[in-house]
Amino acid sequence: MGLLINGKWQDQWYTLQNGEFVRENAQYRHWVTPDGQPGPSGEGGFTAESGRYHLFVSLACPWAHRTLIFRHLKDLQAHIGITIVDPRMLEHGWAFSEISRDNPVQDIRYLHQLYTRAKPDYTGRVTVPVLWDKQRDTIVSNESADIIRMFNSAFDSLTGNDLDFYPEALRNEIGTINEVVYRDFNNGVYKAGFATDQLIYEKAYDRIFNRLDAIDDSLNTRRYLAGNRLTEADWRFFTTLIRFDAVYYSHFKLNKQRIEDYPNLSNYLRALYQISGIAGTVNFEHIKTHYYYSHSTINPTQIIPKGPDIDYTRPHNRVQAFSSPG
Ligand SMILES: N[C@@H](CCC(=O)N[C@@H](CS)C(=O)NCC(=O)O)C(=O)O
Image (cartoon, rainbow, N blue to C red; front, top):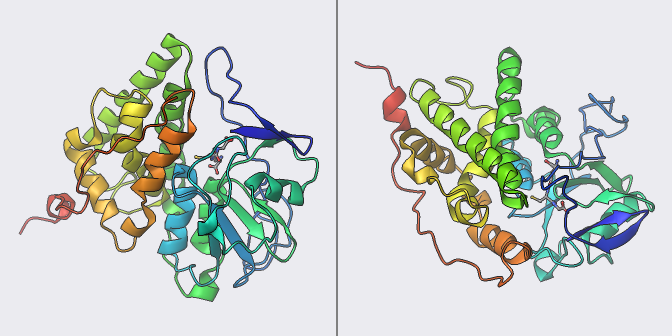
């Protein structure tokens, strides 16, 4: 675990601010667009082309997981390759192991070498996911929220897949949901888990379970977070939800209750998991290994729990609950 300072790797744990983990903003915010025009941020010149871009991901990471889900939902597998890092993130940070022989960037062992290849004096954290441009030999984006939006539409004319998880009419609603779900849940679990101050931990814990209670209630009348349509808001929520009972409940001390114990959330989670191809993006071995083995300040023995034993393929009630009577 560490970061780059002026292009030099330093092995160190997160620097907290008065006991609180504060996430660093992603530094690469360019956009792939259909014609290479600049997107909402960064420079232009990143035209959507088959085989030009490559994703570096961890199967453990909830942020990287979003990009894998969108690569699948939008039929981008044949157009965008992936390299999966080793789940154990230790003194060199994310590293490539024998499972990542398909790395298009040769002669690198660690992800930080990809960052310094793009910018030799890079200063900052070295995170997954990374969307890499093989043609310009640089990073397009290391922000999952942007990458899923590019995947949602930029390659549509190549794939012929025009499924839209960020529909114009729901954008305000999706934005509002994303903001609170990020603050209280996606990032909230890290705030609780990495806290070195009791009150900071308890504040994050309360926010998480208040938010889960509210969403569980809202799922009584809404099939998905933004109403009756499946959107990016659900997929951003899903990647934290699916890790909760296996990791966050115990490793991050979020043990008020499990997602399994929520009537609506547990069914909603299984419904998303059972959408075609999604289970294939979920790898509990990588997920558990990463957190329990890499966070040695939290789990110094590096013992990885065997359980839990939850069957996400068992039936859910979401279709039945939302089919109109008669
Ligand atoms: N804003 C980024 C956050 C990505 C992120 O924090 N990834 C974690 C893994 S789950 C990481 O690579 N952490 C390494 C580090 O912070 O040193 C995104 O959503 O893409």
